[in-house]
Length: 355
Image (tube, rainbow, N blue to C red; front, side, top):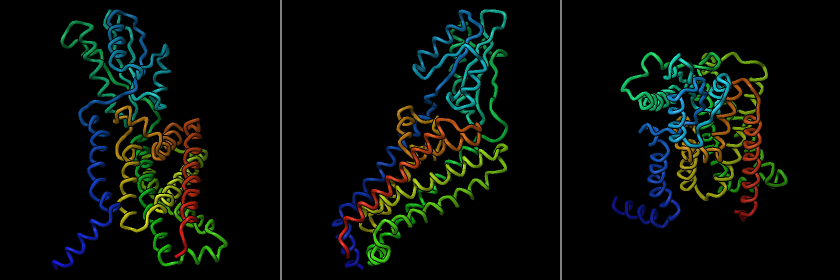
């Protein structure tokens, strides 16, 4: 028993990449998760807010100036209340404020929120109430004059968000796991024989990418099938757009998985590395918590992940019912990741000597 333990420890210490992946990545994941989700847990949410001041009084200006000081560039002003509601519905703003005339200097305050973003509305309500108290010079002047309004289509917005978020996360998990079969094929010499029979590595890597893509689409279908009763009524165009997004998201997962696994020499390296990457992408991309709960810097970094683009595309298609620049941008990004990953995997595998 002692000999086995000593031999195992020596093997562990000799495997420098494996040792780094085992000992360094877990605390790194902790630090990243604490930075990403810690602010939301403390109530420090970097909200994007739209404001319409229809009251035009001294107190309404104090509220506007206070929000501008607190939010900076994340506060947008509009002269049209319907435009403010549309921005919240479209997701261009996390929440909104309408300041309407009440017949006196103190405005009537309406907090605009979208379904599934009640947390954003509650956080903004607290900020606005504090500013209204300062403006009025009272301790509780907003009772009876502050209300909330939910805008957006009927249905469960959270179901749309989490169906997309969960499906993307597990599509990437499955793709990483499925791509590891290439390690066994490489070590056994099967990959070399398949390449000779097929006339090169392109059909081999392409076949793996196709298999992983089909598997990912099937996973996505099952997730959305469970969520379907909570989704809004869908038109044929929305269903078609959803299918394109599902295929491209699965293809991007396949391409990235093949590229990452091609860099590994063993499952001992591939498993912790792929798990770390999947968790990191899921956390930053919004698969583990809504992106509006993240600090602004991580929200911006999230646009470098396929998860953020896929989730936004699903929300835009299924919840808002439009095919706009967000959806088209997501399709381009996901397709680029898929193709780039496939090319990278092909290039790395082609440089390896035959066993």
